[in-house]
Image (tube, rainbow, N blue to C red; front, top):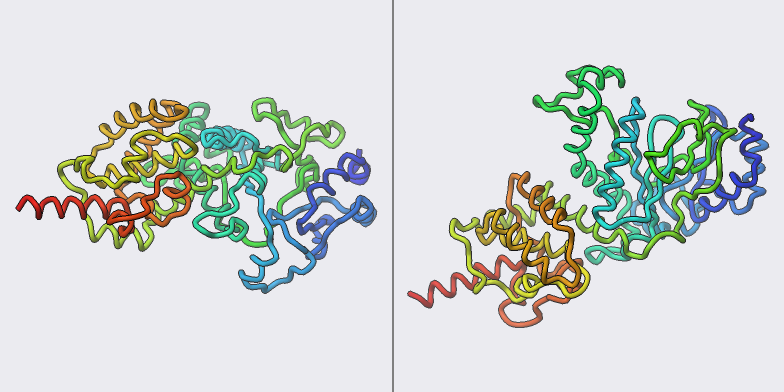
Length: 424
């Protein structure tokens, strides 16, 4: 089967049309790139591209109200006005496909860890994988900002967060199957390229480069051919069952969809997004946190719960509705600032978990504590006005001295100070 014959199949054209809705598209004709912006509204539009000799078909991660209004040089504000959404695409690439598949398996485990089950997966057509989550799975707002305006930052933050989560596991997975020298050789790199500060860095062999993603970023559409390999970018149900033979034009089956909004669950990716942004704040130590750290020192003796604000005490009493994972993030950060050590916090959380409307897996709690142990600094919990936390979790303090504090830790220190004055 040749390229034109493959694209002439109605199943290919139907999927191209479905995935093109609300997106900017671009056809490639060998080394020649088609015009931009471009859209397709009918199967006939795709047939015309095929007649012109289209070799591959690419679509935008962003979804636009009218893609034809796009042009180079638009300001972010103008792009935000035109954009109504974006899909998360984790682009995994490695010169050794085996490493890419290992990485993909771990990314999927990380997504499931955050209760994201309706992801979609496809072979890139050459040396990697694309893992996608539809826009419909994300909340409408984060920190009072419309989620549609979080592109490309949302994609970058989530991708980097996932990389951080799986880095050690990926390293172990690769080195359990390959010797370091063999792993390096299989990608054409030098040993010095992949050993950083005496430690093997798996992301020198596997690339998830979110930094280069910018507005109007395109990716190869599902069921499009990759010119370099001659293989098709086919959706995959399970990485373990992937067989590259199925990506040959003559073997492609059209029984799976990539980025299907109908299979997404509203707000399913909320926890993933929130925890990713929390991770970003912790690791970048934004100005708000630096100011906080100068003002307070972690006490040497653990502060008693008598001085805790009501919002924290409510969380410590168990979660009655949604927000168990966010509660862990708040409680661990708060209690560390109160001088509690992580061993005591872990013991508390394991008992606290029994009070929740539905218990989290014990392994989840232990993995969170393990993550905190690897961090070099203690940072405060989210501020009281952070809409993604206290208010939406039903524990926000609405009056009194507690309501005048910017952060739950401020309240505890203030009450401790008042108590010490009274004793004097």
